[in-house]
Length: 412
Image 1: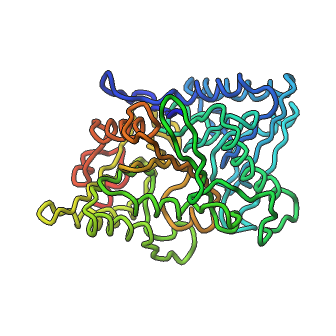
Image 2: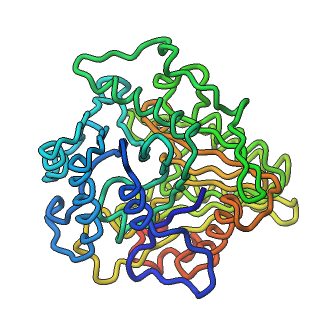
Image 3: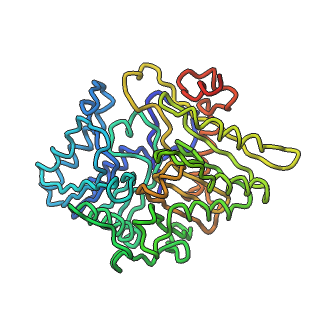
């Protein structure tokens, strides 16, 4: 079980800091290992620069992944892909190319089923290896966007459990599908917040479970993503470190927009009632919505050392530099949380729609002994500390000095 990262080109850290295995390497290794079956869930597919009318050598790793996927059927490896019915037209030819090579593809119309999208990003290889994280099947995820995920090798129990989620998407990708209520028993899980999977490796005992969203896609035995997040926040005693691209205590896509302070209240309670130290690292790029700023300022206004209330927020700004011709890039796309007790790696931003209508998954891990530096929890703590202390993490008041951050408009 190891952390996987994509660090954008020209983002540099000091020597000797913790860095996850490069995402490109992890994906290549998983595809090389495959002997029977590869299953991938991704919001969308753009593995070549031509897909977004960009000519950049930084799409080379994406093209390499596409070629590896194309070659799998000729090695007698079955490939099944689920993706969201596109909400916007793209020029991507990835899925057509893959279909011609014998890959099976299902586009799930979440808009019809739940009024959301399929936003989950995960891989299952041979029903024993898996990847869960923030990265879509996009060349920019490998070179232009900061991504974070986890790869778990040789864990059939967890891979089979994730496969049940994949199968629920696959079933709903059929024409004229309708959501079952309740879900048939084959989608049930024995692994959840109440009964985590216990795994022992390298003298560390880990408790792990997968969470899912939205509620309509979860059998009653599956822990919902929101429940997992709230449980982790309420269980923290010393600190909560959060890194998500977008944070809105509202709906984002449903109109009219609605106030939704569920996670926000949990964070405030942890800081006020239990004096848990909160650090939150959001992303700010050229496309970020300045409407996020007042909510972040509201949280930081509670920060009061005198009353032992600590809520600190920074924005992670990936410098654009000479990469300005590449759309929807140069952002910190991470979606994780680490506390003094647990680690969480997800696929969702933190606003209501991601939990009520949109498909996502989360992986929750705790360890004994807890403070091992080599454990996933230890790696995640170190990565958060590295980013928080880096030159790319900017206090809200200093944002006007960073033209690559669109939130600075909200400070006018």
